[in-house]
Image (tube, rainbow, N blue to C red; front, side, top):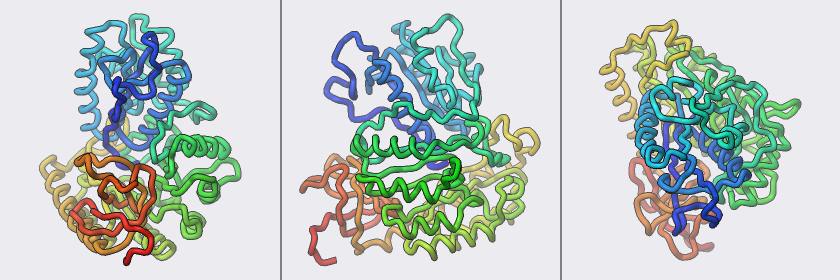
Length: 465
């Protein structure tokens, strides 16, 4: 799912450097960094909930931590190398205080298993299905050899466990774990196991908990989120049920699988005002032979028809996507088909990557990586240039419009500005002050645009559009 590679380090510490940490000096403190997709962010919230229930405080300063966890991604090689570098850096706290427990969790832990412990001074290696036992591992403490807990469990959904939503404006709820698609390039089925859905009652419980903690927008997460089914409840029914809960102002979901996008889901989006008019729809390639080698299960004509159905069913919808260039044996003509598709479909934005071989996948075992690195780089640059121009044109067309936005929090670049998002997930920077705070839903007039961001000013009711 996307965005595929990102980093969430603890932020906005209190004056004492801790977030929601008890004041007693004897309380053990945990520090968690997160790499990867939104599901990894949600898994971090789960681990923090488990640690909090066990009496651990949370610190935003690794120098004060008794437990340091790095929650990781394995989708891209660069993500793994960043984790290696960061883990080596954080290991200095363990060398300084031998009681400190250093652990790697998540997809990289599942992918590399004991190889991590051979390269890093870690005490724990815990895969995505091992979080239920995390506190047990910490309670037992390191016994010489690192703990390696990477057994996949096709029934584990973490039903009923505490989740630390942290009081943010956006609440993330994982409704489905694992993936059954087995695309030839993708390591996710091997790091997260097979698809299994969380019970609707548990999803609604977690949504209510997030709303009680301050969330106004709910993001429903899954590797193939629209494939969700639990007994007789499908994804369209679940969308409507979540949107009907008191306190939920917006509902998003990511990432759907194109092959499983039904007419019922489009209808639910069209008839449920709280469901945002935005879909992240991974294309990967517009070449039918490449899609076949990827085992995506659809051809470009089917993808184009789905994009048209979404735009017809939900007027004004924004579509974003993933594109992977330079896959095995990709020719110049096949690459050109993808470039033409970017021009034709005009996605709001795209996460664009060059193919990197991942150990354990079908492609790594059976399909030679034949496209030279310099060709991949050039193709990636070509795709980025096209998408950057299209995104800039789409954003420029918003200038002068009035949009309703949800204010998410401080802008990263200016203490005097706030980041907000439209229902179509477009970022809008607005001035701070005048009662505009995180969690507010306000009308803004878009005053200017850069190739990546909108800038607006809040409008009071009755202001001229």
